[in-house]
Length: 188
Image (cartoon, rainbow, N blue to C red; front, side, top):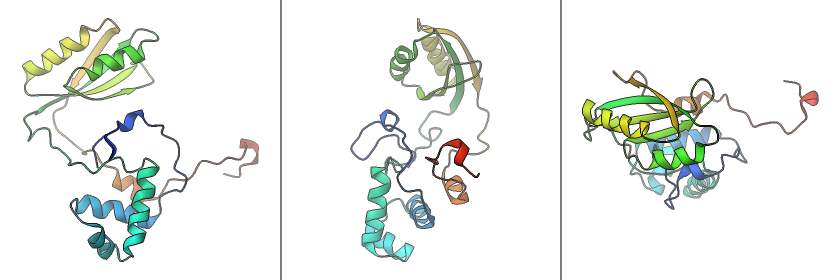
């Protein structure tokens, strides 16, 4: 589920991140956990494992897909095992108003595997993967060749302390739907 493309192949980062119509409940989280633990499971077996009817499973998954919660069913890829053992985070300060331009440039660099617009001292935070330190240096030089990048700061990853994950957060159940009531009417 770490794949950033939707079942139709569209980039999930391009989609509007509106709040889902219906918040996730315990069954939704259980289904996501089962899919995570059994990625090749069929709908009927998923229903059996969840102890619910197959149409219930199917409608829940369709709803989560339609709301952009489930963005894909692609394999999780271990970049180190795939030959990219060197990882770094790179903070970029960019020229004012150049976010769209730098986004296009970053997308053209294969070693940039994620990039986020941020607040604070930098404007963009990138996650970079490379085959070696030399390869990382070439990627960093490519980033610095951009006419929109004013300054970059890189931090090399030594080890993974907590791998990317979402199920513990979803299982914690601390989410709530945004209130549509004006702030002066809220009781929270």
